Image (cartoon, rainbow, N blue to C red):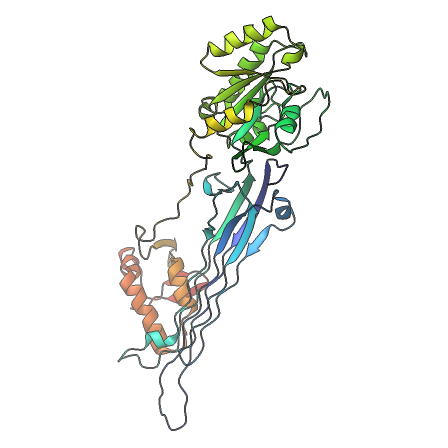
Length: 427
């Protein structure tokens, strides 16, 4: 388990592998006349998967490499040999990384589990000319090109995963506390400002019982609106199941403990109602320098709100021995670590039109057809081969494009544009 971690973001581009092209090939063998078409299909392009890796703790690598492209599938070959499927590209990220669409912010995947997640799918391989052979089309001289893989522009956001988060104003003793209950060793001094990065520590309760605690960077007034570390702090807390709210009960920094407690919770509520409802145990720290009346007055205030209060002193270990068991017992009653359910769903191919197209009149005697699937067929069409053109003509008719052109008043010799191709309309 790494001892430090922090909110980190990176934006990258993903390009899944293109499918291999189908082959145009004819069987050639001595003493075998007219062996027929035997072009094989192209291989599938590689997918892009993300895998959580506990050996990684930052997204630093993604600052130097922003583009990830999976291998394309191998083209088909003669003798009906299918091209090799490309290997998938596996990108390893720290556990707790959330993938979002860069443009919309919608969650694509949450890498908190052990299973790899497919984020971009490779293209399907094209058909070889052997697939187009029919009793009436015995010598097809065309094949289908492979389909392109998915392209995605994604943002990676790393959030701390910890069972317990220490929250509170700067300099209330959170760093001292986590260094006391775990092996974490943060820098500790009388700083007038907050820790800049969270510190993770594993707290041992027994030989096999433990939990992860995070010293979260301190809050200041206005954090919910982004003041100071602002949203960085609050995004850290979103992963924690239980909050240990540390308050300087002695008022040694000249602040009122009750006001500190109210202000921190106000900032949590301002950022997320769900976060404000997260279970809390309130730790009255620095009891060794507080008057007994101060401790009891704060205890009455906290317990009056139905919360558990524990007076401690991180510096002298007063009350510390009870804390790990109390926290572990409370964690057993809480749901597992929060994960972020994907909001992004790929369009269902079954629900979409099989062959969508639009026909637009772009001039007095000119029409444009927008149909990406048709452009792929055109790319694999041999315009000098009669049967290949006949196959293309059949696709036009079956899709309804010709009927739509007639409905819009197409005349003989009008120009039809399909992608980069232009044709004259002939009855």
